[in-house]
Image 1 (cartoon, rainbow, N blue to C red):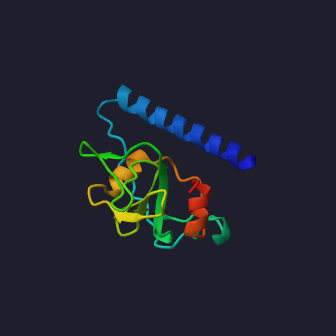
Image 2 (cartoon, one colour; image 1 turned 135 degrees about the vertical axis):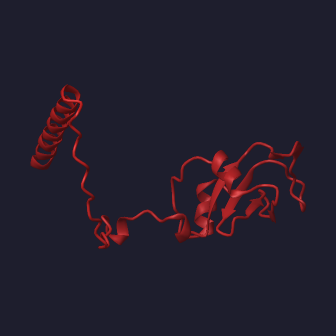
Length: 144
């Protein structure tokens, strides 16, 4: 509570000082404003705000991302089908750490899709809502 009031007061004081300086420069055009003094940058490392058990894993901490794609997957004007069973809808799409996209059909057949990339995955997936410790738990969460 007190920190916010102090920050608001400091902000208002800085605004007043800036307004006074601007008014002085406008009323006396021959007066130049003082040059800003460079602020030294500390080389110290700022500790993380959150403890490790509360941090959200980054993309480097997970093997990949997955999403469910129930409609037919159309790439370059053609419907993609599973090369083993011929399924053409209800996919699980994986975006792997090595920047490959893998497709998994309902019958658990997996194939790499070279025509898709992580940018396509990011455009078509929603925000990450769950992190799962195992692949099986992730597939169960998505209904496979």
